[in-house]
Image (cartoon, rainbow, N blue to C red; front, side):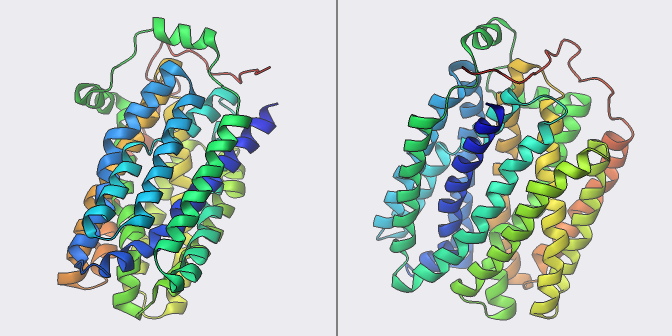
Length: 408
């Protein structure tokens, strides 16, 4: 049963990310048809992340209270409506509105992570969460290439396909996916003392020694990595003259690397290397990889540099989430993953606008140099607060052990 549930979540996340990645590399070019500047293009990407910053923790907390399945349905329905609006957009205003609607309900990855936490034990947690990363990577193998190929028929065509995929996802969740949070566990969570979704709760989480260090690392790693992801189309256009189709193919290549890392390599690594060390060394590898991205003189060098970027990004995305689920009580898992996702979304508010300004005023190397500087500082922080202070027990001494849930 557990394997079937994991395969189900994998398929749902894959279809969701396939739809997302179909339109992601096309948004800058879509916005340019309405006269958007690089700064406005950055704001367009940031608008989705800003809405998700508010929506992801709420979705995570609601899934703790009402169950994973109904919240997944609401989240995917919002994505479906957002893509329909995107396909019908005839102005910058509607482009922004479509991304905001999608972002406000865009907590499906957070809820999928909580679902996997429900049905795996601590030993297999990272491997299970790695499946989400693999689905993400596979989505980026096919999505950008499909979007790039369809863009020649108009930018609304990829958006229509993305909407169709979201509709398929709704059917999969509605007809196939059972609830992972049993009534007994929901009652136990309701009776436990759990933080509400407030700024105060976020600050309290950031003050907890190990959980706070992981959340800080999520934010600053996310800031540097989001800079790479969200301005890559502008970077490629400015540095190498890449078209939407070329950009889509390169991101598909990154997807292959990410799928291999998170679907296969992470599971092998966590069996041999403690998670705190993987986080520490992943930060260092990402730092120097982004430096290589900034200084890449040719397309060949750029493609080589993508390998350690995908490797370190896959490790950090998976292992930080896994470590967080093991460091909080059962009643806090959905909410904590939501806070983590919210911090990552905040980086996507900052990174596109800041990256767009950097490219416009300082040149295409600036975002990579910025990311390198941020991660070198984070590397030092992780040495003091993660590698040398990693607790042998969760921050919460009353943590309830999360065990696989049997679903009849």
